[in-house]
Every structure is written in structure tokens, then in C-alpha cells.
Image (cartoon, rainbow, N blue to C red; front, side, top):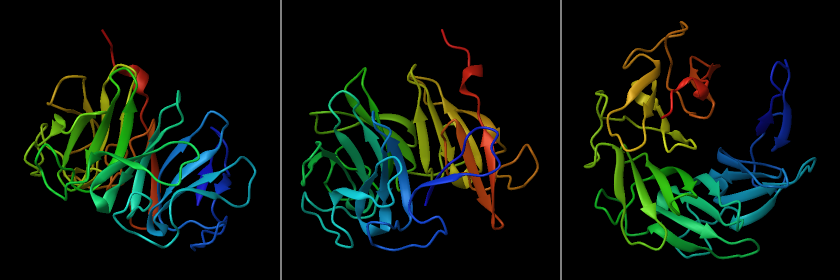
Length: 267
């Protein structure tokens, strides 16, 4: 399910999926939801990963509508997805960009279209600059007309300008290797791109949140301690989210880690 929590509230509201957390493939269910986006009308768009689809839930609705992919049917054709995860949206055109994870590509779906277009990857898994490797998160950079893509399988972040056939390296190891240094990532799961082009990454298996200033490949740890797992205020345990709030899961619990992005000085 997807929950909405008002700041300071002690209870959340279910805005997509079943309030009891039941999984399923009907229009009223989700199955391992991944990334979400909110459109200009306040509708919630969800990467419904194990149902191989993207669902749109209107405000107050009890069921969702499939806007990309086909329920329970995965494949490589342009009307199919395979474990889609992260999603992003161009607010000007409504185009939806989907990290089609296990197809190692990013798909673009225009509003009302039943079939998408490959805009990044689609050349099998790998670390060549024409390939993606388990892309798990995607962000649309309107200022450069490009997609910033987090490669879970390659432990890096790349930029793919729309209309081009290859990417440029942004952060992490260009050859796909994992590590614990400030220039490495280890099984990253999510990221945020801010208005200045800086990137915040949930560096999951390093148990930290990394900050990469625009144009720099050397990151700074702004939450957690590299390689240290724990439940004290200075530590994280497999953080999965890098939104203004990141979430740390472990030992059957979730702990919200609030990251105030405003504290970073900008030129």
C-alpha cells in the first residue's frame, strides 16, 4: 500500500492499495509497490512492481487504473514491463518515464498511450554506455532534457539525454563495481535530484545517505555511518529511500530519517 502522513500526525491514510497491506493483482491491490509520482491533479502514480504495471490512483479512489504495462504479464515488447520500479513525470507534457528494471531500460509513456517507447537502455544488462543494469530509480531533469538514472545492478548513476543513444557518468563506479569509499555506491535503491542538480542517494548496503554536488563524483555522507548498522540516531540500517525523508528498514521495523535538504549551501 501507499500511505499519506500529514506532518505531526500519529496515523496515516491509505491512498493506494489495501489498508490492511494485502497484496494482489486486482485493480484494488498492489504487489510490491516501488516508486511513486504525483501528477498535477494530485493523482498518485505507482510502480506496481510484481504486477508488471504502473497504476494511477485518483484522489479518494478505492481502485487504480493501469496506465502502463499489463497486469501479471511481463515481456520485452513496448506494451509490456518487467518488474517496473521507479517512475518520473514531465509536468509539461505528462510523459511518464518508467525504470523498467528487469528489462534494463527506461520507457516513456505519453498520456493515454497503451504502448511505450524505449528512451534509455534496452540493449541488455551491462556497464557499457549504451546499456543499463537493473535501473531502479529515474528522475527527469527538465533543465537539460535528460534522465538521471540509478543503476542498482551497476552501483552507479548515469545521465541519458533524451534522443541520444548513450549515457554519461554521474556518480558511483563507471565500471559497475561496488565499494565503501566516497566515490562508490553499494546496491543503491533511490535518489533525489534537487533544483541545483545535486543528488541525494540511498546507498543501501553501505547504510548511508550520500550527497553528490552537481558535477562532482566524490560524495559526502550526510546520514548514517559507512558500513555501520545500528538503531542509534547516528546510524542507518539498509536505507531504501532518499526523498526529503529516507526510510531505514531492519529487524522488522522502519525508522524515518529526516533529511533537511535546505541546510546544504548553494552557490
